[in-house]
Image (cartoon, rainbow, N blue to C red):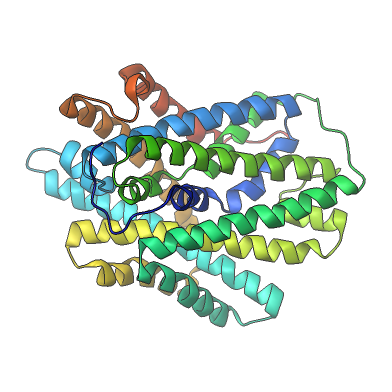
Length: 385
């Protein structure tokens, strides 16, 4: 076992919860709409393919990080990918782009939480943003161990509230699952959304560090986290398909609320806050470490640099900033391709493969890149309604 010294040691459940918490978000509530525009057996095999492709990519990222002593993406790129006179310039450019991508996403989590507080408790938007920031950012300030513990509690709670909804749906009048074929575009769009909802690539180095380089534990945590995330996606999807005769783009919980009654909105508020909190914790913890690796500012100042800009952007409320999410997604796609190239070099340099084994060979690297590109294409295709 390659010993990695991280901030603190995580248990298997805490590591698994970090993977789940990073992936859970608005994406899984959007899957049912796209699923409703495909037949039920296509949903199953598309989900299976998405799980396998994501698992392959996450294993490669884990091994890349392990070969670089638990480093985050930018440090791995600096060590494995960037060479020559432009090495530092490329490193800082990648740092800026990836940091920008994370900040944009996290500012959206803060804005989303403020909307929940406004709808539930009628709090002013600014108050909701500040409240969520203080509560969520303080967890990351204390450190990785508390993030792991809180992710574990939040994930168990999310499964609990969705379990309540599933039972209520099964006890109510249900509709038949569709067997109609719509289009290949719809299948690709569904694959893209599921792949996006399963993605926890930036949290993988946290698992590597938290489990101190235990390759077997890392594989189990990633497989279990991705698998439980997949289970949650399928649970919400089929629950919505069975409970709603017409699934809309408003989100699964909105549609179920119309079917089961207004009480579902309370469940929706709880689930949304938990999902936003887990995503906030995972993303800002990752960005804190990226900032610290590149600047050597220390964990506390790096925490402030990772979280405060997100709050500022949310408070300023520049509407056009939402448009930057497209650029953020492009950055993430480029990062995914860069990761595979860096992994290829890292694997050759290490001369061994502790996590991937044969699954990390060149054909599987090409497959991982292809799957990432297919997911990107699927995200922009027109869906047949």
